[in-house]
Amino acid sequence: MALSIITLAYCIMLFSGNVVEGTIGLNWGRMANQRLIPSMVVDLFLQNGIPEVKVFSASENVMKAFSGSGIGLTIAIPNESLHEINSTDGARDWVRTKITNFVNMNVDIKYVNVGAEPFSPSFWNQTNFGAVDALRFIQDALNEIGYGDKTKATIPHLTDVLKPNHTKPSDAEFRDDIKEKMIESLQILQENNSPFVMDVFPIYFVRQNNMDVEFAFVDGHSTYFVEDDNGLNYTNLFDFIYDSFLWAMKKAGTPDLKLVVGQIGWPTDGYPDANIANAERFYKSLLPKVASNKGTPLRPGVPIDIYIHSLSDENKMKVKFGAFQRHWGIYRNDGEPKFKIDLSGQGRDVYPTSAKGVTYMPKRWCIFNGDTSNLTKVKYAFEQACLVGDCTSLSPGGSCSHLDFNQNVSYAFNRFFQTKSQKERDDPCEFDGLGKVVPDNPSTGACIFPVEVLAAESIDTGSSMGERMATLSKLVMLLPFLLIFLAFI
Image 1: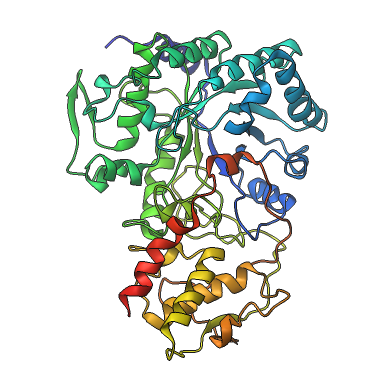
Image 2 (image 1 turned 90 degrees about the vertical axis):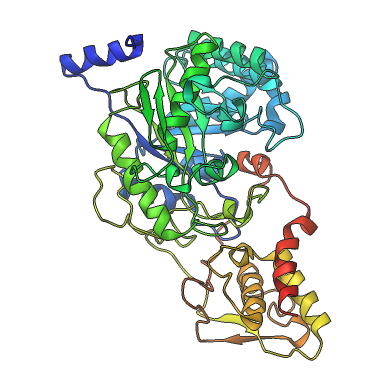
């Protein structure tokens, strides 16, 4: 197959000594009760040498924390805010508030994500075609003030923008219902030398498409593979999906557009095969691949930029796809790494740096006192605890799915207790006489009963992450945990 223009350009740079390298960045979502303050998190990025970060909440305190850091930022516009910028004046106002103000504070803003997977039927009841107009208005506003060469607007897309059930990359193309708008957006990106952004979650994709879970890893151990797709072979999902998007972009008329992976990761809880060992294995092969600049079968030798999803767990995340959506973090909420991961991509067997200056709540836990004389009362207390606290680790396949009846109730009680910062106007461990506070850690095996960090801030309202992870019915959220509870009765 003939080399594309972008591949030729890379070869020219290679021989001239000016080699472009792939970037390993991080996503930072903040949908959690207890969160590290922004200055701590930015310090964590700097300690680990993270060159680029995507923030889903472009609030003032977050943005100011990056001032003078040298970290390239991607900021997001939530879908529900797109109507506010679907005009020249609206876009100018947004750029002035969210870009100019912070650039003047020495914040390096590289990309603007216009919307959050607005064409995804997996998340939304209807596609948000207004994102394309907003993309044009935002990029025009950036160009107008002279920022267009440095700050690019784009739209991130989930894998479901491709037609389903394609069995090889060359068969991929964008869905018919979005094709016209997709082509329009691609033309805007091409005119402004902006990248196309794809989001992919391998653990979910392989199960939804009946693929071998081993295909989700990049280390080549899968029995599933795609052979002789126009002379190219595929042994892992990353190459398969990346090249699928390249083919879809080519068919849409933009074959040489840069393709960035905006979200990719492996959860550590709440789903079959979602565990710490698999997460460590996933990154141990993926990140060296990116750092090696080997590219993919369709674009060999072309550097790839990826953003790991994500920095830390988020216990307020929507769980439409599954409980694992709250467990993407490579860090726990206290800034301690969960597993070894070399963020430089060199493949070293190392832990990333821990957060500095973290303050914990007192080392105490709330557990069930074992009184089962009134199971109706216990059931009600369990329900109330899981409506407030994050009980997703109790889900089938989760790290706490092996607990007995008393431990299940204790886990729920403790999550509520810690979410309420161990204090409230009323006793947060009372539960109508069913709870008790203990000084001994009830964690067992891989199931951790956490003590949270002190809450430094409240959750942002109207944030970009908030729109993507909109509130789900409390009844739907609670149903899996009620089934767990009832199984013991």
